[in-house]
Image (cartoon, rainbow, N blue to C red; front, side, top):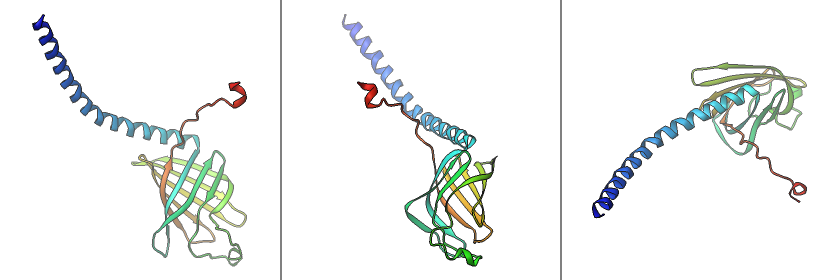
Length: 181
């Protein structure tokens, strides 16, 4: 009886030590799997043409990089672009000076949308036509979610933004109050 308990304790301690080693190895595997899943999610979102870019810094052509403290971003929804971005730079057209709003703040339909796979991620090129301007937005999306957006226009200096590509959380279907009753 004592030998059985001793043998059981010995087997349990050996199994525990192997399990601890397996956990250490699985952390690396979990990290690799997480990167793979994130890259897959980015691929699917780019393919669906529904994504959100949250800007953290702005880099005007003739100025230093500035950190953005407010919530700025660009949302692409199938056939439309919702841009809430600041603009720092030179305007080449005199009729654009009278506007007090940012020329990068607009809601416009997409004229062209192209996607290219690059070595480190994706390049998404979007062209929108504003009332008096044509704006080209180039999203350089890394597989880890870091993104650079460069915006060029006919009437203004080019500008670039850096930030993150937001992967939306899966929607949870919650019951309304009437369904619960």
